Amino acid sequence: MVPAPLFVLAAAVSTQTGQAFGKQLFAQVGPLGVVALRLGIAAIVLVALRRPRALPRGAHGRTVVALGVAIAGMNLIYPALHYLPLGVASTLQLLGPLTVALLGSRRPADAGVVALAVVGLILVRDPAAGPLAWQGLALALLSAAAMGSYLMLSRRVGSGTGSRSMLALAVGVAALIGLPAGFAEDGRALAGGSVLLAGAAVALLSAVVPYSLEMAALQRLPAPVVGTLLTLEPVVAAMSGYVVLHEELSPRRWIGIACICAGAAYVTLSSGRRSRAGRPGI
Image 1: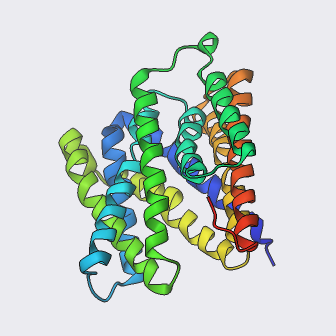
Image 2: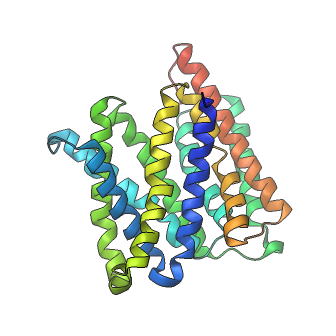
Image 3: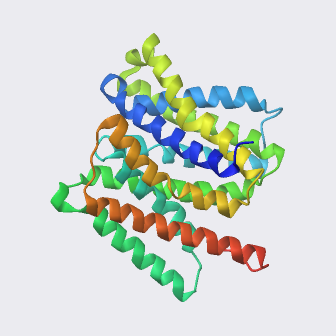
């Protein structure tokens, strides 16, 4: 039997490899075209797999729409990749979940986590290794904010069987937002057979497969353990960027990535311990 932690690590590798391949498509369809392909194909696959029986209404319907907007916002990571290395963009995106985890916390140790994250940001910036475009930084931070919103909205959806159908519908909402932008950038290129095939690979690698692997892991591991393993994604992203895109990072940037990952891992684990002890989480 495959150890459950390997499902999480495989999900991280799949996600970041998919994003690296998506960046390779920028020359053909542009970043927004990749977003359109990724969201459109992922929505078709997830809705086909989950087969929602009815459209949610009322509060559930508003939550699905808000979740879809957040998912669309998370995909701003792709325009950010036009300006930033994959490892740097993924690290900045992790600041969203880290901020959500720290909101409302009053523990002295969490001040240390904030300080560690700030040090990590300073190191990741590393002007000596070349300036990071402000457009990429802004887009990556907007993606981080969207990821934080996604996590908060996901708590409303819950973890039951119906939640998976709601998530599939939310990806559909995100696709409705992303498709017009992609077609406006270069709609003709999106219709090419080779581009559609490459887009399907990106969608499967960066969305459908990781989602399935994470769900399998959550059935066998506590959520805090899964969350802690997922904080390694920036490291995996930096490695994928090096292998697939030949993006080299300076030692300072590697240390900065490690600082932010360590802070996120600590917060995830400590939050899990408080939840098991019956105390409110962060």
